[in-house]
Image (cartoon, rainbow, N blue to C red; front, side, top):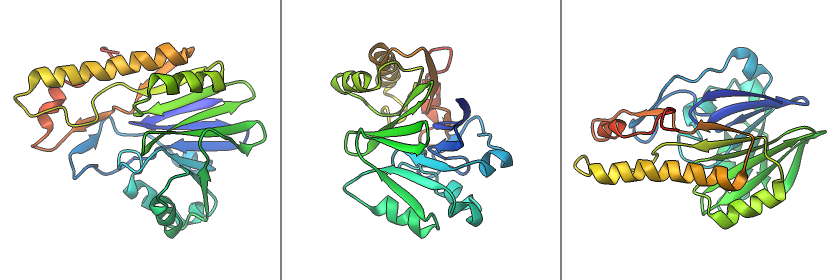
Length: 237
């Protein structure tokens, strides 16, 4: 299996004729122009051409990049299958269909879905909005937790179901609002908590390798730029 880190929470998996792009936010800013991609994502025209599937973990704009979706050539939209968790609200599914994606598939919680012979995926709902994705090929198992806040019982259950995990993809830095500019101690505690969650996920999933991601942004609005002083880095990881 070939995995290519694209940017922020987006990665491209390829094997057995499947090209699966996860959480595509590749252009524009998010959250009312307060998040900017850093560094800039990289996805070549050849990568776009071999896409067969897109998986979206949840509707936040750093995972469902609307400008990115709208930039996909119309002739590709009818060929690409879009995967989304089976949810009580069909708003995202309806919107994707309105964008010209004729193959929009709801994924049942914790059930394996074949994407091609020898390549299957299972989506796990986490909380009321987030979801994680497990990928299993004939040789490898990959788990993408992105920015899910996954309770320990859920991690244990996923580990029992998945068995050996070759690669874990997981968030390593702040995503939410960690307090006002004067709340320095609160920001430090919030940043530390994300690393502790990162470590907890590794402890219970016990993968061979970990890709720290879902944190490659800069806070870019005058009202939140101060957060950049306390974000976790790869060195912290």
